[in-house]
Length: 555
Image (cartoon, helix red, strand yellow):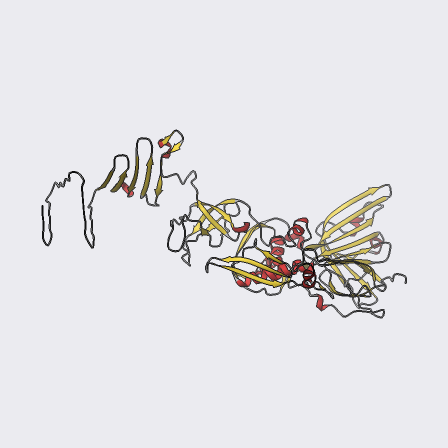
């Protein structure tokens, strides 16, 4: 049977005006490409024998471009893309002169530049709405579950940040015309039933009718029966474990990801490098990762009779092929080509995995947040922890002037239940910070740092003995000191109050304990006090001496 053609014409508009007839006559080809999690793009190629077609068409960078199709089956044009010109090119060779125009939908603007912002007590869908409004787009969002206490956008573009949030909870994020969509993905179950040779619905793909080429694969490689996410809840001091069975909403066929996994051992995938602290967050991440991994089991490409109805995020039925591949699929990418031949649409069905090399090596999911390797410096901005866990809030001067972290836990020597060294840094202190699994939303304070203004409290440089530090200790915020002297000439521990009014010295070298004060020395015991000397004992007072007791015995 010969391949059918589509009785479809293309319509190109610049700033709302359709191309003039003479300009349209020079349009050699038009291409529209869309993919989930990437800006939609278009390419227009004009023959340009007089080398002035761009000015005659009124095309320049920033101009609004819409490309739609008109067919006998539709009462009105069907939109393929609304975008804007982002580049113009000249292509001159021995075969002729051409002008090439390229552009993207408005999501490309969200990918330009990087910024840092803090969001507190919000849902991910609230963040999407805020970013859309700030970018001059209309938000169309599905409400996400769970309120997140703190989310930090750390030197990321708005697009990368939103795509990361979407991946974390299994949402789709894209822009259509002036609208930002942040929504739950289309399910394959929403596709129509199987078509036949009488079908005229373009989303019913029938082999040898409107389905011209089809290449599909079902694979059990890296498939698992279930996904578990393990995290840690520091408030409850217990592990948090989320679980989800393997699923694939991108394809509804006779086999499921769980069926495939069972055929090759039924393994469990355990995710440990995405910190979560609540059960809801763990379950949500497990479900998203199970979908990302499970959807990779079913992949296909197809060529169809051209139709604007066939775009990324649309569920279609496929029939007339091998029974294993007959069923319902969700398009993840499309390419619409208008040229000298018939209008054709090229389709991709690739699941929800990140298709970059990094994503494939990571079994399908790139990080939902920016990862910060190693350690960084920070400034303490708040140490009044409402939960009395010794936590502090931080600012990152190298990142932003005003972004503030969530409550960061302190790493303390010997920390445990009701014991350990408690030394909470002061507001304004410089500290060294690491991030749990590199997640900037989970900071840990490793310790404080001295600098050019916050100086070392001991003049240890004058106490160096052959490269060995001989003077160390602790100094409180107001100046109380515990000092350790360990040199060839002295070995002692010195306890000294601010200003030196009270001093206690434990002298190892002279075998001496010395207590000095400008005030009183009081020893008060509820039971016996015993003072015993192996040698002589001397009691001396420059004033009156009083010895008092119920009875006084002097032997």
